[in-house]
Every structure is written in structure tokens, then in C-alpha cells.
Image 1: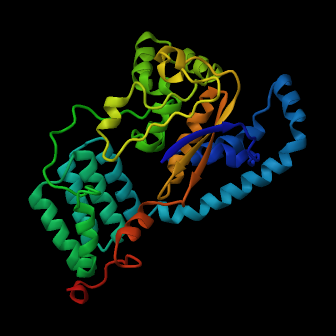
Image 2: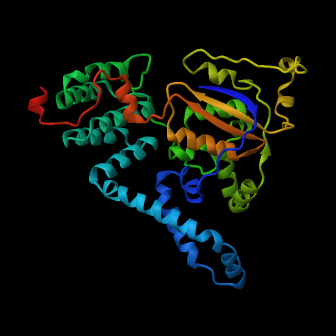
Image 3: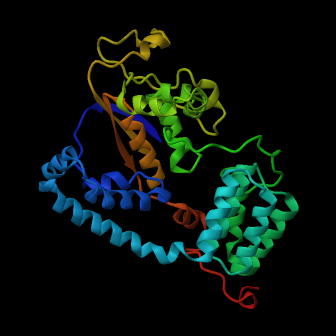
Length: 356
């Protein structure tokens, strides 16, 4: 992943309904569609009727777009009502909240015994290992054995790759329990993963939106709730946008970046009159820019739609900077497993006798 800045460019406009839905957490899509649909019939006062009449020109297009997205969402309803989907979602949310991790490991074993998809099992195991700092050695070895017996020993290289130091996402020896669960905050990029922020986008914030990292949104929300002014604070935060500051590299976050595996590169390209930028104090680097720019974020190896949604959110928080995303491809958990597996496509579990 890399970051670069250039002159501003205006992106092509998106459909109104798509623009509202594409960056939402999936749990909020149905509610937003319902609100938009009911909003057509809530004009009661004279002022509301006048606004409604003023929008008649675009209502037909909006209605067609709304019908399209409602129809698309209905295609996913049968999947979201299955026991396996809801059990998987429950395990994921409990793991993110660090709630009874041993019980979640047992639930994953139950899904495996029921013949759940292999990608689902491995993704849950990796999530449990990452959020808990590892899985107990005995439980992890038993799970690996059951995975190989259920899905085939040809997946042994995949399990070895997940446990290798280069990835280190399936490890033993869990950390002590977390003191408290993470809060899902609407005014932070962690909303995309129900409390967890993509580290790639957090790194972009460390470069291009330092204030969004230095000031903890969750702590601000707690203080507003205690003071009884949470509603006023949200209204002010949504209406006032800070001017974007110039790119200043990793300055201020050197210690944090040093803990991340891999080499860190920080190259500052100065213009003809910016020769003294390296010696400029940190406070002056955070001053607002004079003209808007477009910051290009490169993802080598691919990125997820969730990271794109988080970057769009970051772009909406400041004036004067737009983000352009360049990536080698769009990936998800399943394609990631397939890319590191020696088997072209991971298959579902069949009869155990056939796999042994």
C-alpha cells in the first residue's frame, strides 16, 4: 500500500441510492432502504409538501433505483435466514467483542461437524486467533486434524501457510482476555467491521488525516454522552469539516509504524520552493492546504470493498482532499484463502470416509 498526492480530479457521479448504500455496514442497508421508501409518504405539513413537489422531477428515477436495490436485497434474504449464516454471524460478533472465546471455538467445531463450507471454518478460526491472540494449542491441533479429515489432506499446505511467520494468522497460545469489548462508533472507520478498523486505512489516516487518529472518536462520544450533549455534538461534527493538511509522512507515528512487520518507506517529494519542508515543525505541517488535492492510495495485492468504504468515509471528513484508490484487484476472505492454497478452489465437506 502506498500514498501519493496529485492535483484534484472530479469523479463520475454515482446513482443516489447506490451512493447512500455502498458504504454502509450490511446490517444498516435494510433499515436505510425502508426509511427511503417510507420517506415518499411522510409529507404532511405545507413546507414538507412544497419540498416534495420540488423533488418530483427526480422522484421517478429515484423510485426506479430504489426498486432495483430492494429487489437485489431480496435475493440475499434466503441466505441470511439460514441457520449457518446466522450462527456464523453470531460467532464473528462474539469474537470481535471478546465474549467467551472458548465457547466460540466450540461453536466453530459444531459448524465443522455439520459440514459447513471450508472457507467459513478457516475464516472463523483465523478471526478467533487474531482477536484472541491465538488459540489454545490442544484445541488448535484438534481443529486442524478435523479440518484435514473433513476436507482432505491436500489442504495441509494451506494450514501450514496460515501458521507460517509470514502470515501468522493461525497461532496457538492465546493472550489474556481483553479488559472490555470494542465499541462500534459511527464517526470512525471502525464502523465498517462493527468495531474493528482496517489497519490499511488507519495507516492512510496516519499520513493524510492525523487528527482522525490522534483524537479518539470513541472517547469523544463517551464524553458527550456523559455531558448529555451527544446529539448536539453529532450535529456539529457532521456540518463542520476541517481543512485537510499537507502530507507529512509518518511523522508523529514512527513508534507505532515500527511495530508493524515489514519495511517502512517515507519519501517526501518537494517542489522547487519547498526545500526546507523536512525541517518544518510538525505543527506547521498540519496547517490547512491552500488548494485541494487528490491523494492516490495504492493497494498492492488487492483490497476489499470494506477498505474502499472506509477510505470514502475518511475522504468525507475533510475539505480539500479527495482519495483515488488504485489496486491490483478486489479480494475477499475466500479469494485470499484460494490465493495461498495449492488447491485451485476450496470445496465443501463431503463424507468423511471419502476424505480420509
